[in-house]
Image (cartoon, rainbow, N blue to C red; front, side):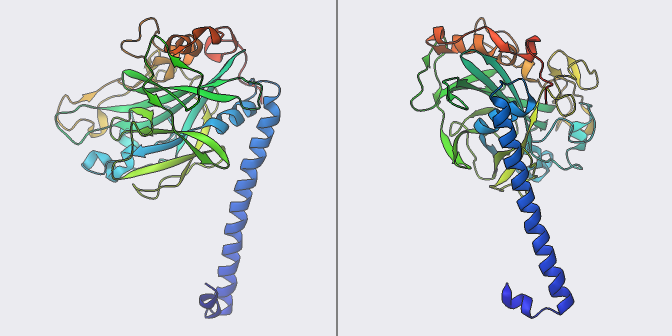
Length: 357
């Protein structure tokens, strides 16, 4: 680098050095902003999770390292872009019926939505990953516009700053899967535990690792789903939302958005008819070439968290993974007696205001 600079004319040399310094300064400012936001959130968390800053800090602390399998085959993959995570309004509007159409022409910067629900014993952190397309490269499979899957993390309030992560329930289409990290006090309840929740270090702290399959985007703990060939590795941020540089980018930041936010979230837009066709179900149509053959594109086929449902988990009702996660945790895990089911903060049930700064 130095020898190359010495050979440059003085004007170009000045330009190159100035550009480099600006780039380094920008990187430093971004890191500083992230640290400042996190520090503010830590302080706010001392007063509970009613503030958006506190929820940001808590959910950033436990946010998954997220592996996304990517398939680049077929025209509907858009060379892998159809497997990139993004925000619901990635195309600048809150319409659900043009997301398939706009996937190819808009940037898919990485975002995930977080929500926090609190009892006296646990925090329930829900992370939602959105794709504009649930797609296929086979004429024998169906496709649909919009796709939302996610993971519920169960954090025990043990007196420490961020508590301890004791369990997870993931969403893969019409089934939920439960996992616990090594050393967790939880055992199988009415549902059997499906595996171990793996952890990895990021920014000096252990985070759970989750993974989504390509095309249909079902989500499980890694390595129960994994990257097979092409794939993107996402890491959480409060400030950065990056688009993968390729279908094999292994270091991409996804920005956490508060699902309760009146500006960025979509809980406050749950009655918006351009976005939802019914309670918890995204509106989607067959425009834009969805469906490789006639009849192979479903409409109104994707759900928000309050529409997620396991097809055979007994008394756990549709949407309760978001609205009543303590009930779900007490059913899925044992001993059930350790889970308080009285909420101190749960905007899904109008308990507590999520709009404090």
